[in-house]
Amino acid sequence: MGTKRSHKDSRAPAGRRGTGVPIRILAGGRWRGADPARTLYDAYVGRLNRPVELVEIDPRVADPNERIAREGQRMLEAAALPAGRILIALDERGRTLDSAGFADRLRSWQDAGVPALIFAIGGADGLAPPVRAAADLVLSFGTMTWPHLMVRAMLAEQLYRASAILSGHPYHRG
Image 1 (cartoon, one colour):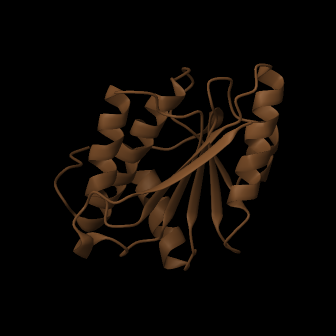
Image 2 (cartoon, one colour):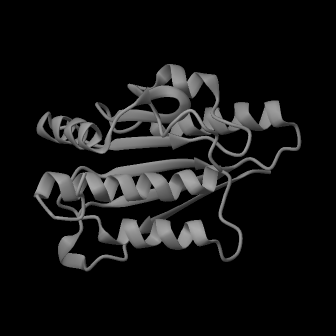
């Protein structure tokens, strides 16, 4: 049967957690062993001043079409709550934003009182079409295909960069 693994990423000092809109990352597949992308992901998530939850969805089905469908179904179930949440699907067919535009989008959602941001990253076979259809925003990190585990690290870095932009921290020099 498939697994749904969830854990809180809480490497930052306790005093820094919980000051921003909570983020849930729904990710197809799961980390296996030591992975440099995991090290990057952990480093950037640990710098964020908001709670981040990574939910790994790994249906362990041999057929790629069935695997995509099951991942998508489980992602939509995990994204259903809380009411008013924003679902952002990461897909190469989505809209591209520069880092400042991404930060502005995050600020507008926070200012609007959005209760949670939920990011969906497909597994090795891609993101299920129903997840893209249900998304409030389909976001692309470019038209190239990226390894799904690397996309987690790239998202964590962009979330940290956005927080640096919004706080005036010199990390972002663009």
